Image (tube, rainbow, N blue to C red; front, side):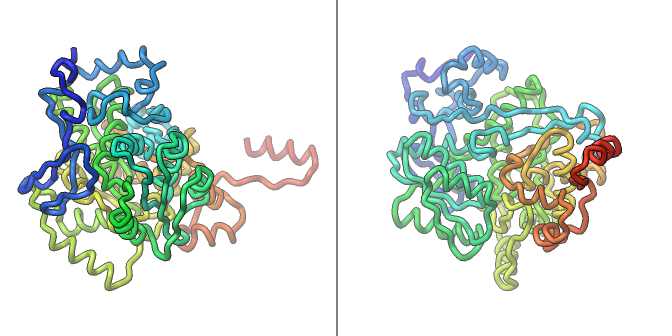
Length: 475
């Protein structure tokens, strides 16, 4: 049973507030304010709640009743179905376009590839969201807050998925104008087409995502535009619900591992917060371990955590290795470069929140190269799920951790597939192609030398007998 806020005669905005993640600071700010960092110390912000007044369900099975309310758009949403666990806005303020109708699928063929026992690998397919990626989970929350703030424009820097999601929400809800910043040549047509089609104002700058991120923050500050990148704490509240749906699909059983690609580190940060809160509420009895997987060409988190020993350390983060590594990248002109464009980020804005999630979830960080990512992607596809390259980093990373013995064959593992295959079809076609020139141009420049699991087209003459022979030979 849930003791609701109405019983205490308070509104949603009375229940929520923004709080600095730095325990030595802990400054708080009201919900009805737009900020992406602490005014006092400059650190990132969380959305926190007065749970005593908000009320928490006695068990997670409370949310099963929401399916009987699915004619209500709010409860149909796979985000707002769990509104009681992110109650920063009242129900009549929530923005939804039907996000979160996603699938957790047991994947035995992929489990064999990873090295897990049958029945132990599950793929959480976020490509089923309206814009084709996990970003919709957070965007509905960010746009809800933007609407609460009467914003007329909303902006983001993007490698593609964030811009597609923001453009979709602005177009579908007619709530505000989307302004998106992309780097030159750093976005796939599958993603760019969405932003253009949905009517977003697209600003392409000379540089990469990290450059675009710097500029969009400056522009948002200068022009008073609402910023929806994952530095926005409301975005991450929505992204918590990916884990709620995983638990729901597992009948509220906590898995042993959550494996997720690491780019700007919003997902890993949100997942850590989700499980930390559920454990505090007594709704789960243990927290799964977290594995964050970088692409080899964009492996800042791996470098800092696994090579330079950077830790959350209860909030006392040693900044020297971080500053030193950032200076090194500047001096050497190191730019992120990977076929997994959705995680092609060298300066993740949620670094500290991810460090905190790694501490809460006893996490590890690994990196996999583009060859391993594309091979894993092909195996995922052969198992029935088409995902973009960045998504496959989770499966490639799980396979690596299994080889290392960090993950046991009997562990229950959930790999997050963050985006749909059609987000970046060029990479898929290049991997499976018989056109060596296309392969070399698209993949060879990134160190991919072979397509171990390619499903190539079979060329035959336009002759019935030859076609039949080919089908008999290859099927």
